[in-house]
Structure formats: structure tokens, C-alpha cells
Length: 181
Image 1 (spheres, rainbow, N blue to C red):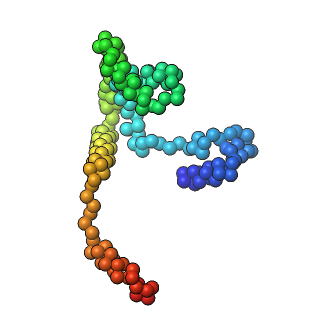
Image 2: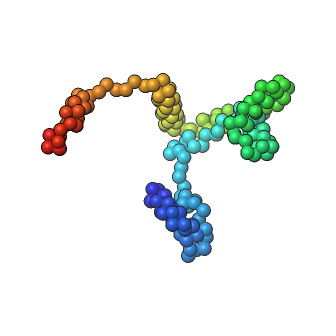
Image 3: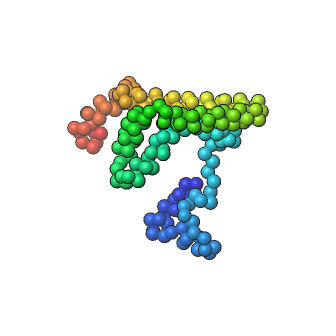
């Protein structure tokens, strides 16, 4: 994979296109990964799981974002999202109910699909899936914790004896000649 990225990077740096790479067959390669399949998940069990449905607010904002972008194409996304959020807050409950009902219907379909997949799993697949989901959850928690500690100004590790020795020797050697160093 790194080889393909490297080849593609060299070709694009030289100003060559994907057609030059595949000149014999006449087809044009648009990206170096078009002919390579990279699985997102290595587990076949987790990859078959359906995606969770969009919440009512996300569904509303996705619809409205296209409308707002058409009205003001030069506006930044953050500004548009703020406008959409204000519009959602001001929306009457009767109109919000449409989006909430659509979410509930999608959630029921999601649950049914999830149950269908769970019934087809063997006990060993079920155990490996639970282990995989646990690993994913722990990784996510670790990332969140690291981010919080970084924001709070995580304390540095204490200096090692070697580090202290080198800083003292560096100060002494800084003033001397290269022979002393």
C-alpha cells in the first residue's frame, strides 16, 4: 500500500496522470486505490452491522444545510450550522414531531436488523464481537481521556536520573571547548 501511494505521489509530482500509468489498456485510473480494496474493519461480523439511524435534529440539519448552502454558497459551515440550530430551537413541536417519528421508525428497523444479525451469530462469533466492541469502546474512552488531560494541562512525567545528569553536564560543557565536551 505505501508503495502505491509513493508511485502515485511521484506521478502527480511529475505532472503525469493515471492514464500514463495504464497507457496500454487505455483505461484511466482516477486514484491509486481504485483497484485496491481496503477493508474498513478486519472483522466480518462487525462490518455487517447496520449503521445507527440519524437523530431527528441531524436529519433536519442535513435537509436544511443543502437549502442554506444554495442561498448563500460563500458562507462558512459553522455559520450555517448556527443558523440551522436557531431554526431548530424555534421550530414548533408539531413540525419536530415529523422528524422524531421518522427517527423512531428508522430506529425500529435498525433494532430488527440488529436482532436478525444477532440470531445468526454462532457463540464464538458473539464472543469475538463483544470483545471487539469492548476494545473499540476502551480505545474511544482512552482518546477522550487523553484529550481532556491535554486540555487541562497534563503534568509532565518526572525527570529521569539520566536526564538530570545530562542537563548538568550540558551546562558545564557549554562553556568549555570541544575537548571538554
